[in-house]
Length: 171
Image 1 (tube, rainbow, N blue to C red):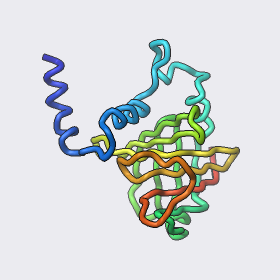
Image 2 (cartoon, rainbow, N blue to C red):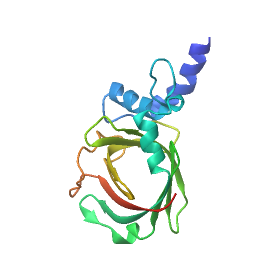
Image 3 (cartoon, one colour):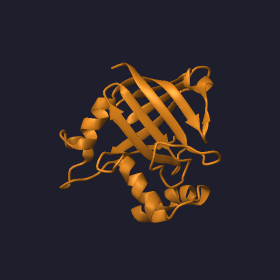
Image 4 (spheres, rainbow, N blue to C red):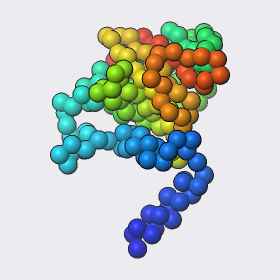
């Protein structure tokens, strides 16, 4: 009976957001946001895991110094954009607009490191890409929503990718 009730709850999500990539890959990316299990322990219980170490290094508020979308520099957006990281949650703050909360995860085993965030629409809406972190500089490049992830730090006209170059302003 529990299985049927779970299916009834999840069925509208599956119907309302058709993925543009194979369902297995969508589920794999969704699992990245829910946590990775190792030896039966959830991600949060593994203090020395690479994911936790990276997330700890991201904690704080970051100011955009560059924002590029589909090959077009957008200094007007960069000047008003900040990201506030906690371990697993991210607030996207843009002056004059409501703050957006997203869940995020990193995959440091990838080269370059993988970065994915899930948008708060209640469905399987995500953006996938890569990140580079060195000291107080963070670079993130994300593919358009529900598309295969960005693999390089570059955007081109019409590709829907977003490139963020951020500087830490507080911890």
